[in-house]
Image (cartoon, rainbow, N blue to C red; front, side):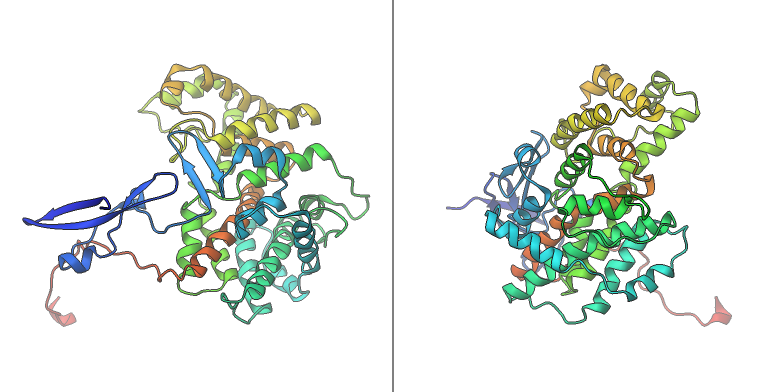
Length: 428
C-alpha cells in the first residue's frame, strides 16, 4: 500500500497520497485538499515548502550541494560540454549526437537575423535605460514579428520556435549593451561558435579586426552552463506560471527576464560589484567589513555569500572559483576592486563565523568577478545571467506545455474587512 499522509481538521481525518521522486524526494499531494475539506487550503509564503510541478529537468540537493541537469553532474558538464550541448540537453532531454549538434548549430545560425524594424524599437529607448528592461521589451516585441502561435503538439513547430529564440536572444542582448555604450550594432559572424559570436556582437569594434581570446570564451562558456537552469527559482516559476495561461514562448521568457532582474535573484552579481566598489571607496579594509557583516546591529549586508537553497558550498561556486582564478591569471588583471574580492573570499573561508554557518562565496560572487575582469559593464551582469538561463526557461516552458499543466492559480487567506454596507459620500 502506498504511503499516505493524514491531516486532521476539527476532528475529521483526511488522507493524501505521498509522491516519491526518482531521487527519493517526497511530497504530499494535496490537489484534492480544498474539495475534500470543504474549502481548507494551505499557506506557504515564498512557496518554500510547496512543489508547483513534477519536473524531469534539474535535480538540486541544497543540503549535499548537488546540481544535475537531466541526471548529468554540473561538474562534468562544465568541464566537458559546450553551452550549446547543454542547451540541447536541457530542452530535448538528451545530449546531442554530433549530427544533432551540427544541425542545431546550423539551424540557430540560419535564424540569427533580427528584423530591421526591431532597430526602431531599440532607438526608442534612452541611453539611460537598463539593459534588462531593453532586453525584456525586445524579447516581447519578437511576438509582433512572429505573430502565429506555436503549435505545442507539433514537434517541428516547437523546434523552429525554440531555435528562433536561441538565435535572436544573443543579438538582442548584445544590442542592449551597445545601445547603452552608443556603439554601432553588430550582426555577428556565422563562422563563429555560439559563445564566440555573442562575445563578438558585444565587443567588436567597427575599425578593428575581432580576435577570439580562448581564455575569455572558455570562461563565458562555463558561466553560461552554470547558469543554464536551477530548478523552480523565481524567474523559472514565473515562466511556467505565465506559460500556463497558454501565453507564447516569447512572452513567457520576457516575464522571466523581468523576474530575474530583481536584486534578490539575477541582480545579485551586480550587487556584489557595487558592494566591492563601496568598500573600495571607503578605503578597502576587508577586515572592517567582515566585522560589520557579523554585527547584527549593523545594516551592512555582505553580498555574494550563502544561498537560500544551498546549505553547503554552492557546487557552481566551486567550479567558477577555479575559472575566476584562471581568467585573472591569464589576462593579468590588476584591479583594486578584484583584490578586495579576493580579500573577502580569503577572510570568509578562514573565519569560523562564516565557516560554521556555511556562508561560503556563491556563484554570484565569482561570476561578478569574472564579468568585471572581462570588461562587461556592471549593468550587463544580469543580462549575462539571462543569456545563460535561456535554455532552462525554454525547457521548463516546453515541459509545462507538453505535460498540459493547468493554469497557475494560487489561493490566499483573506485578512481584510468583513462585509460592510456601502455609504453615500455625504455620510462618510
